[in-house]
Amino acid sequence: MKRFQLRQGEPADEAAYLDRLGKCLVGWLPESQVLEVLSDYREQFQAGRERGRTDAEITAAMGAPGDVARGLLAEEPSAKTAGLRQTGLWAAALALCCGFLWINLSAYAFQYGAVLFLPLASSVLFLLLRGGARVELERRFPNGRTVSPALGYYVPFGLVLVFEAAEEILHLLSRIGRLPEQVGPYFVGEVNMIFILALEAVLVVLLAVSLWRSTAVSIRFFPGVIHIFGAGSAAFFVYLYHMTPFLEDPWSPQEALVMALLPYGVGLATALAFQRWVDGKKPLPRIFRDGAVSWRDWHHRLGVSLLGWFDAEQAIEVLEDYQEQYELGREQGRSEEELLSALDEVYAAGYPGKMILQEFIPGDDTYMRVLTNYSDQRGKVKLMCLGHVLLEEHSPHGIGNHAVIITEHDRGLCDKIRRMLEDLDYVGFSNFDIKFDRRDGRYKAFEINTRQGRSNYYVTGSGHNIAQYLVGDLIEGRDIPPAITSNRSIWRMIPRGLAYRFIPRRYHQEMKALFKSGADHHSMEYRPDYTARRIWRIWKNHIGCWVRFNRYCEKPKEN
Image (cartoon, rainbow, N blue to C red):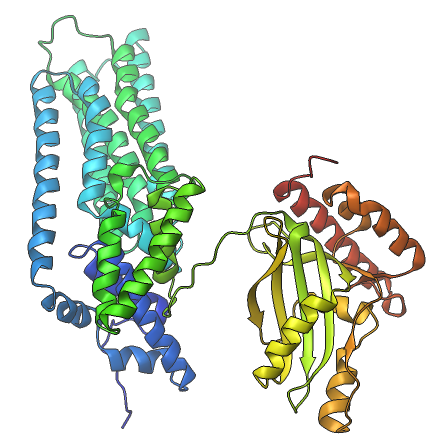
C-alpha cells in the first residue's frame, strides 16, 4: 500500500498547490496575510524535498488546499465576516452600476451610458474578484499557465467585424434595390434580428467562459471579459435601435452602426488598460491595492511578534534598531510605503529568517572591494587577494556581479580580516564584499561568502592558482607559506572598449599600462582553446555585454 494517496483532481505539484490555496484564501484574508501563508507552505515544500520526498507525497501529506484553507480560516474568526462584508460592498457597487445602465436603457441612451458604465463596472467587478490581490499572488507564486489572447480578443474582434460588414452590406443592398422582389422589408428585418441575437448568444457564452476562467484559472483572463462585453454592447445597441422605432430624430442605419462602435471602443480601451495592469507592464492604480500599513502599525505588529520569542528588553532593542533604520531611510528621501514594502516583499518571497538592515554606504562601483582568502585545515590563512572593483553588472539579472577588477595591496585591511578568520578557526574559502566609506575613510564589510566568488579568476590572474592551495593543504599535507597579493593585474568579463566607456577616466591610465604589460585576464579568453566555434561564442558574449551595458549602465559624468 502506498504511504500517500492523492484525491482525484487535487494538485500534485508545488505551483498548482500554492495557486489553489491562494485562490481559496484571497477572498477572506488580506493580501499580505495570504502571501505570508503561501511563503510558509513554500518552505514546507522545500523542507520536504530536502528529506527526499516528491511533490505528490508532500501535497498528500499536507492535505487538500480547500481543507487547509478551511482550517486556517477557522483560526481567524473575523476573516469570514470581513470577507463577506467586502463582497457585499462591491456587489452593491456593481448593482448601482447596473442600475445606472438600466436608466440609460430606459432613456434609449445606452451607447452614451456605456462610456461610463464599462470602466466603472469593470473596476468594481475587478475588486469583487479580488483582482488586485490575485495579480500580486500570481506574480509572486506563478501557476505556470499561459493565457492566449484568442478567446478574449481575436474571436470577439472577428465577430464584431463580421457583424459590421454584414449590416453594411444588408443596408447597401436595400438602398440600391438589389434584393429579390419576393424578399420584403419585413423578412429582411426578421433575418437581421435573428443574426443579431445569434451573435449576442455567442458573445454571452464567450463572456461566461472568460469570467469563469478569470475566477478559476487566472485573473489575466479578466481583460478579455471587458472586451467581450464591449463587443456585445455594439450588437445590443443595434438591436435596441431596431426595436424602438418611435425614437425622436432617429439616426440613419450608417450612423447607428458608427454609434454602436462607441461602446465597443470604450470596452477595448478599458480592456487594454487592465491588460497592462495584470501583465505587470504598469503598476496597479492605488484603488485596486490593499491600503498601506502605517509605520506605527507595522512597528507595533513587529513588537507583538517579537514578544512571542524574546523577553521585553530584547524586543525593545530590536524595535529601536528598526526605528533607527526607518529614520535613516526618511533622511535619504525614502517614503514610509517604500520601506515597509521592501521588507514585506522579502518575507513574502519566501525568506524565513531574521532581517539585518545595513547602513547605506554612498559611492559608485569603484568604491567596492572584494577580498578572497583560503584558510588551511589548521585554521591559518594562507592566501589573501584583494581586488578593487572598477565596474559591476547593472542588468536586472546580473546586478552586483563584478565586471572589471584590479588587484591591489592593503596590508592593514588584510591583517584585520586575517585575525578575525583565525580567531574563528575558519577553514576553507572565504569571500568578502567590502565598500570604502568616503565619509570617514574606513572600509565597511557587508558579508562573507563561504566560497570563492564568481569573479575568482582575478585571483588566478594575480599569480595564485587556488587549486594549488587545495592540493598542497588537503592532499600533500604541506604547510603552505602565507601570501598576500601585491602585484597589480586586471581581470574583466567585458571587452576593453566597454570597460573604457563605463569606468571613470581617472582609472584609464593604469588600465592601459596593465593591458600593455600583458597583465590582462579574461575568464573566457584562452588562446589554446580557440576554434572557430569558440571564437564565435566569445564574440556573442561580447556583443551581449555591449547591449546590456548600453541599456542598463550609465556613463560616468567625467567621461
